[in-house]
Image (tube, rainbow, N blue to C red):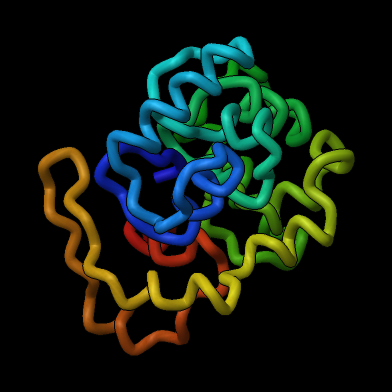
Length: 183
């Protein structure tokens, strides 16, 4: 999941709401969706009310960019260019493999998903994803309560955290809990 849409809750939603100038309660409801659609329309993006990597980049939330299989758009193309692979803007199995290889060579966890830490190592993101952005990707003290909330249903399939994941150290990234759904 590298998108935010109606029904989701958490630290990334709270950050998006703050940028949109709506009540930042971390609950993506109809007010957030409406504000996002208006912002997207005013800024030349598809006004679908779904915030993804291209919206995060445009609105100034690079710490929320998380590219993974299924991601599409300008940020994926920028990632592919940085990896030196075919840049079609579609994150498929080949891109995931290239990301994992790049991560391994860079001494990072080779999970095949490109978040701020991975992106900061690519020259194509050097102007946007700095070390400060990587620091901003960490869960802030006022966001920690979101980690205790139940996981939502995604596309009609309930996500169940494994016992092993629950025993693990708490995620350090604002996307940490979300990213764990795909591990």
